[in-house]
Length: 383
Image 1 (cartoon, rainbow, N blue to C red):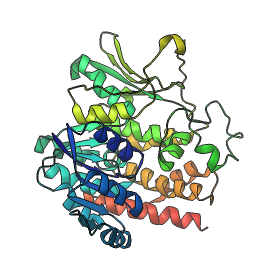
Image 2: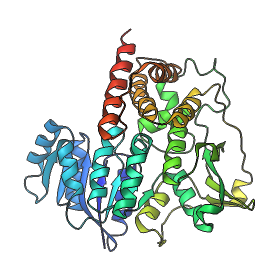
Image 3: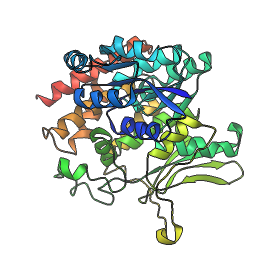
Image 4: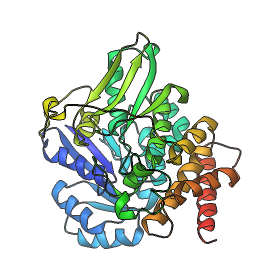
């Protein structure tokens, strides 16, 4: 029996993780659940899964939740300190890091310090603090197991060879809903259009990031840290069918890929059971129905989010933090229909070129860079 804590239990990854727990009650138990402010949904999860502890980052929402579940034995906590306390609970085996945004960094660090394995879905944790996270995980002998379908595919494919035998990582991208469109054609797209991903069912921010290819840029940065490879040894390949989830090319020319239907249950479950595989119900890949797979180079001229991410990744230091923070502000503004879709990369580039960065790249420096990028980008929105 593995005891699991889920950071971001009311989001897409969190809900699908709970599906897996629900279907494998003899293998998994929920130790703690955490979300940002979804009082009603978290109450439902508490009553079903009976965790020892639940956290809402929003303090007012936490007060409301505490009143709602006072008839249960579940302790309700709030804020960043609440998140940290939840991951420190004795007996926790795996912490699923699925909170969206930079809010997820500090509790993941706390979990590693507590000796828990991390099933990581939060991109920002490695994008902004990869140099801290991976070194700390090595020191504490903790596994960082990827949950993203692409990184899970790479993780699985790497089992075919040794680290020294890897020549290149081939990171696949669906291309999003606007694949093949020109700069002119994406100028006036709506939020509704951006949320119509052709293959995956994801949360709002990740879906918009996928449409802009920012998501793929964040995944390149993640892969650099997860698999200890140079940025130049990661190649993005647009694969619209989302059947090949990513590949590894070895020094002898062999390419090992992981294939499957677009369903996040598989990589989530694998992250919880690795190296074992257990049964998972659902549709299977039918090659006769599929018939063909296609591949394209990414259009970084039209979708500049990827190009800017690669620039930030190569520069290193705190620039990835600025990239990420500016994108968070820009995506929120687009989702609220305050800016157009093509303004997202414009705001990111503006921040990358103009935000003053602290000298230190420790956690304090990361948070200072984040706050500076937030403030600068929000200021540009009001101009």
